[in-house]
Image (cartoon, rainbow, N blue to C red):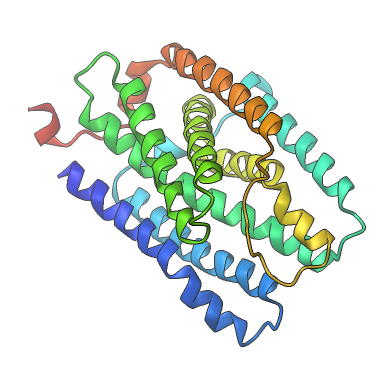
Length: 273
């Protein structure tokens, strides 16, 4: 039953990515600028996906897994995440203050909406479903985080449709997404606030996807090749940093209180029988 639910969630997410182009074509009639219609399509699809995933989370009994009220001052991880969000956004925004304000805010908003929808899907639903399935194992947390992060990363191969010649660059995206998935999973399990995790994920995307802002900077009217800039040294450095962070936070998963976590994971009878 859990696997069928997992497939259903992934199918909805997949359909959401597929229909972005038709939605962009529809919005294109309203916005002559292709850049504007591209990001409005991401916002529209992202908000619909968020609504669907929020309803699914509620019906699956996973509200407490995704959100628990806590005092951020007493949670050092919470404070570190909020500090990084403010720091990175301050850097990005101050570096592009001279850009058209509407375009800048549109790109930022679409980036955050997309990231939050991904977090609701992969960390809010898929992660706890996988952990439920492996609940009898001592390492059910690590198994759930690893598999959900791998699935999240592999989904980025869908970008090959837009950039079929950029296999190396897309592979880099996939690898980076796996690392981000592990990091986001750890943060969610520590602070139990998926909205903050989604905002942090969006902040990382803003920082990593600088080419999107560069296209606004030079005044292009379309996103011909959205994604990363893949110079050799930058790629090596980024991959090294992602590897170190992913390895570090994957090991930190052992610090999570598994018994407390089980209490917010409603277990299907078929799983524990």
